[in-house]
Length: 340
Image (cartoon, rainbow, N blue to C red; front, side, top):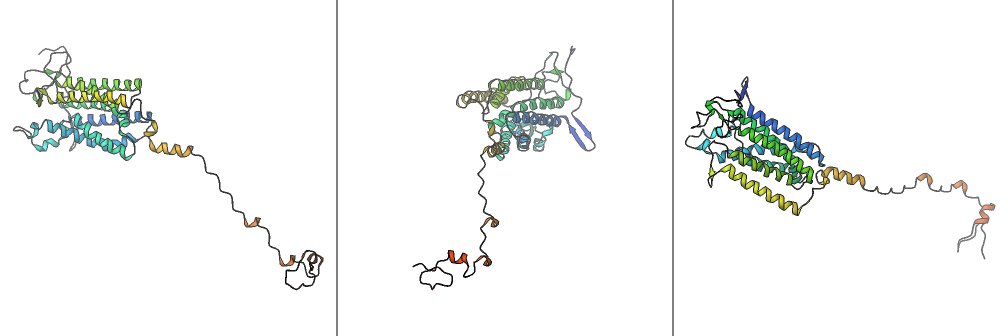
């Protein structure tokens, strides 16, 4: 086939450094995670949150998200591993060979994020709003791992941007076609566009209460449904529709409903002090009036001196005679003045 132009596939996706394989798919995923944490951290601080929280929560969210993504992939494409011609249950654990379902990653990753923010006393909705654009960018970067693996491409095409696929990776029945729709690129570009729209909408309408995240989910699902319909890899169907297309439709509708209902019930955005309880408590302590000082106890040096024995006037002296009065019933002594 004579082509004016095409997108070549990488000649390899694994590089061996001694006994250790370095896989491009894993590198794309890791790079996306780091970028998502960086973007989410900056947005979180800009909203009034504590620095470093996004990285701390990622310790919980990322592993659970990867597990959830793999579980969704294995459950929806179980025939690849457990079918009559499947590769076996051991390969179901080989994440580096590709296969992470975004829906499972979002669900279990959300559980991990909830655990992380709960430990810090922070509500989940504003955290989800902060990290939404970063997740979209991470998805765009992760899709290039499919490019290195020469997988998840679309139907054959003669368009100038057709993706060249090696014969070893062409599906059964399509061996005669050399170029296919680069669905990995379509989805990556769509994810970048989603990230830009979400950031713009958040600034335009000051969105809160997880509406930024819902907008990301809705827009991504729309694009994913379109891209998924172009793919020719084996997949389960539901009501005659590819399962992932059907799921994307349901998720997009659910996100749209949440956007509408949430905007009516909870307009505006969360107060910044909710995002950093520690700082809010410190500010409250700083603004509290100081308690008045307790009066000082009198010092012993300030007490009146007790009269010394030498200060008592001797009997018969003028000072003693002038100021003394005999007690009732007592015999007057020398020098006492008798009161009649």
